[in-house]
Length: 220
Image 1 (cartoon, rainbow, N blue to C red):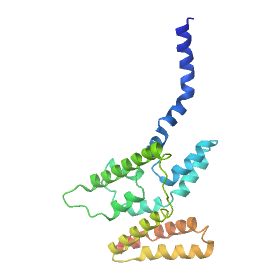
Image 2 (image 1 turned 90 degrees about the vertical axis):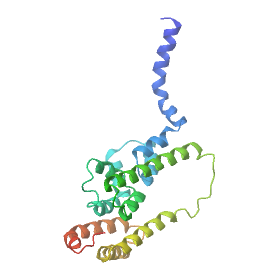
Image 3 (image 1 turned 60 degrees about the horizontal axis):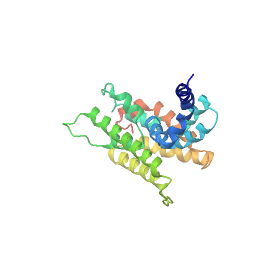
Image 4 (image 1 turned 45 degrees about the horizontal axis):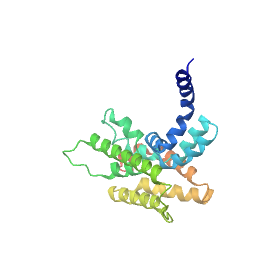
């Protein structure tokens, strides 16, 4: 075996071991994660999961708990996603908080296809997410910003979503049920443990009362 063959064989043997480093140096991790994990909170958790042993069941349960609110988004969008054909698969997968807010409350012009409108809202928001995450991976360590107070942004957004739905619906039975059950769970389980019981009880009650609420024209 001559020197060229030795170098080639050594290169081919060494290259697979360096692929993870290549991905990290070329900022591929943030881009690939934002492409496949379209959930901000889950991306933070995924970083810790990647550092330890992989437990599929644990990852599944953690994802379900963190993004359980999407169950309520899904119930609200059942009627809107009907008749969208193949696009509904991407619409379901790509429904983040912001996309839900737009697609649920937007007044779509009569001459605009509803399915394509929601598809492009979802696609554009996904692209913005990937672009922002990639830029953050490239420049995040170089730019230092004071993020104190930014944690209120999500609270403000959910408040706006709630108010928009309140104004849109003539009856507020489901909204009042959600508020009442949340307050009840807050009293019973405390501020640190009420979230999951509240979501579970709201899901159960709204599912149980789905037909009466639909007939009454108030399924939010």
